[in-house]
Image (cartoon, rainbow, N blue to C red; front, side, top):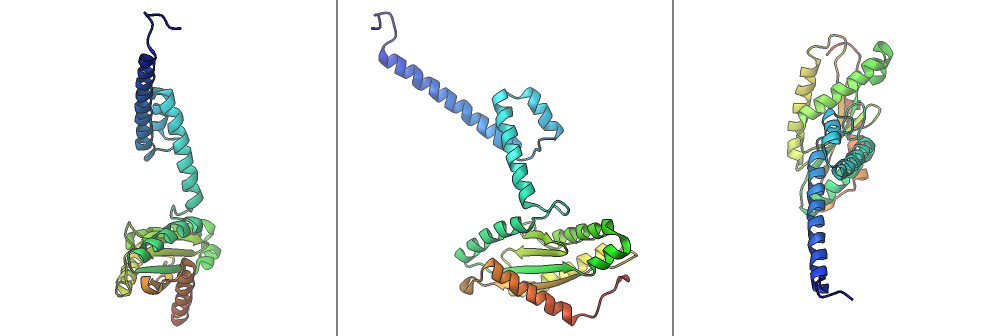
Length: 237
């Protein structure tokens, strides 16, 4: 039994409630701090090592966990050579966007590309130069398409782009822009001209295909375009 001078049950409950509110507020501050800081940091970054020394232990522990988790997710979905999405990342991101496009009745274009003569580049100049050709291709795609578009290296010499909110009338404009970008990329390359074979498929929300169906149509179109073009060689364009 609590004496007359001790805290009442009501006082104890009030104290516990106040303590929980304070703890909840502190936890909320930690979570917000972790989320804000971790968006722009990597575990091995110098800024993170500074935070390790200066941050509250609880903040550092949570921060490290979040950063590692995000880095692992990034590595699982990203091509390590070009830093574009890999096949898994592309299918995850593009599938979600197609669902939204169907719901919002938006048209989109899917482009399927492969690098012409990559095997010859590897054979003539080595695989290091072949890797550089893939990086140059990724750079050209990033310049030709918008930041909101989803770009990926699917594997080998194959790339894909889902152009957001794009319709069939924009296809020629996009392809011309990509062609001009490749021409600029070839200005300082005297040994061979980097070129792409490109096919496209339109996503119609009224008669929507799956992502796999769009990929198949774009792939077929790409091979049709390749067959119409003269044979390629490594001489500069």
